[in-house]
Image (cartoon, rainbow over all chains, first blue to last red; front, side, top):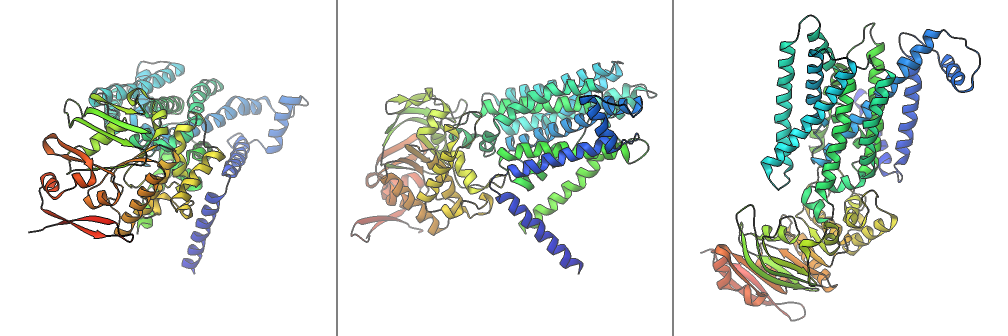
Length: 359
Length: 260
């Protein structure tokens, strides 16, 4: 009985997947996901230690727009507008940014197992934050340092790989150099931790690296918005050409695509997205790896729809995970731990699935 | 349309692999490149396609030197058909073929109805329209080779460059690919292809370029170049060339290796 039921369920899943894939305008998927996102946003407004009911929420929103009677306490309003709304938007932006960077890198490196960390952006950012904490920078200073070191790490990767491979553009050298730079910056992080004061600095660094959105403010949102827009818009514009790139350098060139230009734009934008996401939210792993897979399962590999789908799914996912992080227990769970806890088993599931398909 | 390769030298880094080769191909002609492994056929290909810089000499298309052309311009004239391979992602066949339009599509646009039409036309021309909605990763090697050919045709090129189009294909698919190659040449394309089988040169080519080790290079009509003596020199094996008659009474040559 159980077997029958699971088989039927599996068939249903595969049928619905097929219909989704075959649907002419895959735009309907994007529409459904947008609605889901709006739903998730509304629910997230109401969740948290200060429970805000839906009616209260709409009253407050209509007051902000049309004016009217105030029937709630000032603290509720502060929670909603100063804490909850920025946090919700930042969660969506970070999820979307990491998923976008991941999906784009997977095409660029012709490998579905690649994540946005591959060129060193997040370990660089981690080191930037760690050293800023060690030097007692304020919150803005930590963010700035994380962002700059993230960009710097990728820059170092590119420069070294250019020196190694000479005039040829060699993607393998780039990946290997990325690994080296990643390892280097991870060791730098360890050194910083080793040097840090064990009473306050070490815990601060450790918590920062675990990732979290608990201290996000309206200002962070505005700071994040600029690199997010600068990173996402060019990628959205060139997204169809990314399909061609995923067939490899030479074939893409044979089809008339200037691969080095597109690759540069792609790496630049993805780095901007990753470094800014990490500098605000800390090391939130796995999103850039698994969300593109989920998106590809829904709409297939064509970047025309894959890229927006991936960004939307990433935003929804991180928003939901962040809700869990702040509501599940009385103390907040670092969000990076949660995404790993969800991401790692899901990745295993993908591996098994892949094997079953081959058999 | 005429492609002239004039005295070109190419290779990787400081090492020259091809030294001073000259060949011409015109519309309707098929040039087969024959030669043992490692002699530089691929290097020559990559240089013609602009993946590798040509060190000396020139490649001209209708008298214009192509080293100054942009990738876009080159892709509109020269189509590249790589060996059938497996893609990392599960694209639809139609999605793959439409990618041939990349050179015609602006940096920030995606394929129009017209582009999709052209892609469907090239699938129809090769008789594989039924593959349109299948996944590229799940069709056979022979079908994949046809899809890559369709993608190159979608570029609407005047010259096709094919890298061992028959390798890894079963006997039937090899013959079908060769039929298409002949058909495309009849329609006026100039075709350059590499092959490991001298028989394929007999079946298709109007011209053969035989590359040998130590920079020995012969070019001419298939009957002048693919001879028992030349094949022995190039590959180090003994062969007999036999003749048979085709359906219309035309003479067809074939190459039989002698194992003793």
